[in-house]
Image 1 (cartoon, rainbow, N blue to C red):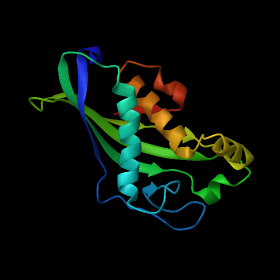
Image 2: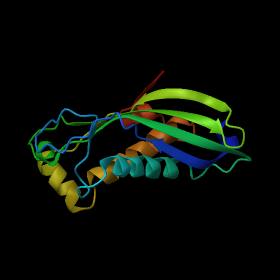
Image 3: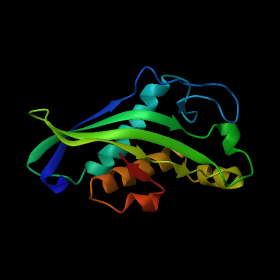
Image 4: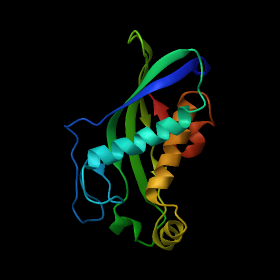
Length: 169
């Protein structure tokens, strides 16, 4: 069905009720934890990450029906730089959101809100330092992962479960 669509709008909603942590600890208690970009509006930074992943995933859709992709963040908990530096391989970027598709002209809901648990393994320790040295930052990894998740959810890419993702209702 999605091959008949063109995504004309991507709305990323980051509710004000979500908590943000800047605590310099390994595992802050918060809904949004993001450290890789300079201090600033973390909600806006995370929204840009989602928008970029969704734009890349939907770029090939050029069907006749314009639709709006609406993404609502539930949790975005990337590793802090302190956690990333640990010599383990058990870190996880915890990413949860809902996504739905609306007709861009009428607003009719075409695909109801679907909860997507898009957790992904995090590179840590010396592997993280090496990855970062060649430009494979957390941001790059997460955008690529979200691209795969959205493409899989829309049925235009690989199975998102191959990207460590669970999609549920």
